[in-house]
Length: 300
Length: 229
Image (cartoon, rainbow over all chains, first blue to last red; front, side, top):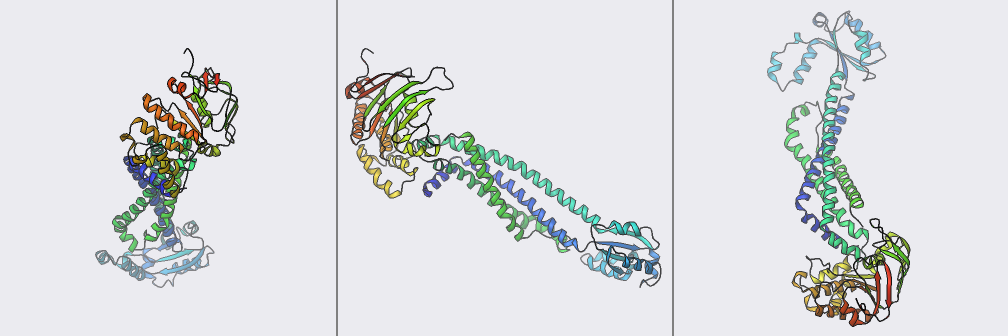
């Protein structure tokens, strides 16, 4: 196999159908960028979940008068509740946080917004038990058995909020994948069409090649490589697009929640890890589409 | 070199067979005219030899190939041992004379140094040594056919198939092309030429196989195009 010959054929072919080539590259790039975006969202969800996994707690807020009068939790009903929680087999640890400590934490969380801190008073914050569960996925054991007990104002379950947060992220991921799929179909049809067009414009060459006894590899490889080269260029563009979106847009928009440790950012390493998949998908799909098209539409 | 045994070919679109149980044998180094009116089966005959078609019945042998039954992946080997020339030349218009001839070798994977050596040789053989860098559009019809013959012969095939190679040429130019084909025949290459050209067949006095309605109606060792036609 003469590589230089096949290569020059590929270049001529791409140049000859330049408008189709560009259309093919653009659709491939957008489709792959969306696929990559979806994969990045998946990674972000995974990492954020990891971030929260051992932090999910159930907060048991105490009523106002208990919060005001029993700062060290030495009297009932606070003391009874604490003993009951500490001996509960579903509970791993219990931390009592009184009103002043809650205020300190509040100040720490919102140190970026001093005007909010200025407005807050320790009296507005209830004392609470921060309960970590043996099985973080089953917070209902606490809400059900402690809800309505004397001294308890309310019980909030962080995982409920997290579930909503993650299902929103999952929704984003699904939409991105769906659009990527539609674009991928468009890219597929374009690749198939371009291969046919390319084979048609070069029917004289191909006819002569068959006549003088060129093998099928020689006659068809240029078309196949053409499709794969456009796929490759599309994938590289898609990776560039992802980097661009991260640097110019994502880093800005998510700067606050990232700094606050609420979500994990998408970093360069994520893109680096997703990139090989994009390249592989691009080469695989374009190569396969090209091969099938040649098999179905182009006589050998 | 060529042997057809009771070969029939029926196309799906036609009720009458294109070839109707014909048997023909051509020895190595022969020069054979294949004549007959349009639709007599000449083209089908040539296409069977190249394995562009598979016979409906019968056996086809070319050199050592059992053409009808050979595996598809071996077809390129068969075609590498057959050179082909057509009425419409079939040159690549965007390539020079040299590139057109070299193309036939490039696509079967011949090394570059071989191509560099044999292409000028064959161009000299066909009388185009000064025109290697010309484009086909700058050449006369006869010169273009010479390029096509050079391309067909450059890989030194055992056999040359020519399908009306003089169909687009004036009589004088046709005569030159025939001289060239004769020269190639003298190197030991079997030449099989389908034609309508009375003058050429009559003047060459070579073997003539005449087809009509898919049957061999005449096979003369030193024939003319046809008496009384």
